[in-house]
Image 1 (cartoon, rainbow, N blue to C red):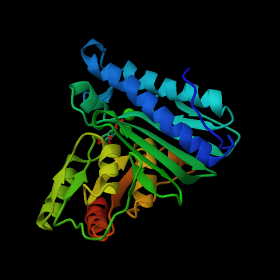
Image 2 (image 1 turned 180 degrees about the vertical axis):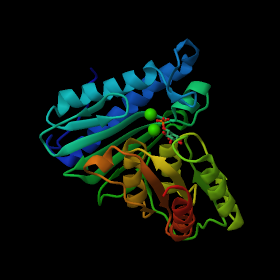
Image 3 (image 1 turned 60 degrees about the horizontal axis):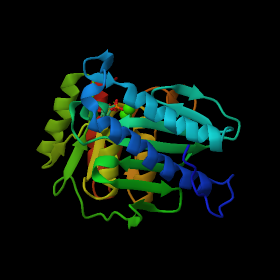
Image 4 (image 1 turned 45 degrees about the vertical axis):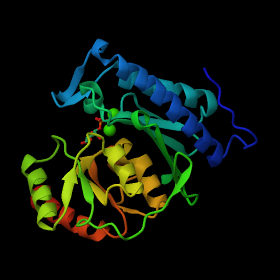
Length: 278
Ligand code: IPD
Ligand code: CA
Ligand code: CA
């Protein structure tokens, strides 16, 4: 395995894990890109239905990340979308989505990414999202700021639902009418929507100030955790996601926005959650 250079940082620190996360995200992104370039050879499998796809690319990219972690931090826990939970003893839990945007990936669109988040004692402490087709790495460590390819990110309040685009995600875990209703309310408020096919990518677009906000009624922790850290460190706001207990493995609403759009988007989301999800 390609060994990372952790320079002088003591290995049992958050900073050393953050350095490793960026190396892993790049290596995982390279492996995923290799599969993407020869995606016609991949056998596409379905999970819950024809819109919920997976291939060996997802599994092997996650295995690569797990190999890195087993070598460097065998005492850390891992929760990955494709290979499940492996408990640890250090208090650290890595939360990995090897390819977020699998449907886009397998259909040949560039909107997919590798997402690596980290909890310490059930608190979100770090996130890295690598978008290989854009050659973009978003990274954040708690209280250390967020970066895009090394340049600092900081949101201002100028972006609103009205003067920007908003990412809306949807899957078949929610009533289809709800999607229409959320989009209807957003447009009635003077906004407009995009959906790229990767929730994690849309969340980091929020951190970069490209989208006013992002909302999806039901996602998993591996879809949002890393990007939540990046949004928060860029000065944005996000809903809480359950970080411990049973809630951690269940799906839940995901919402993040810049300071000028959070309240308005949250209001639209809550109105629709009351109507469709209770
Ligand atoms: C999915 C993507 C998609 C979102 C789904 C997620 P996957 O993740 O983020 O944009 O709408 O809810 O499950 O399956 O591509 O890792
Ligand atoms: Ca995902
Ligand atoms: Ca995935």
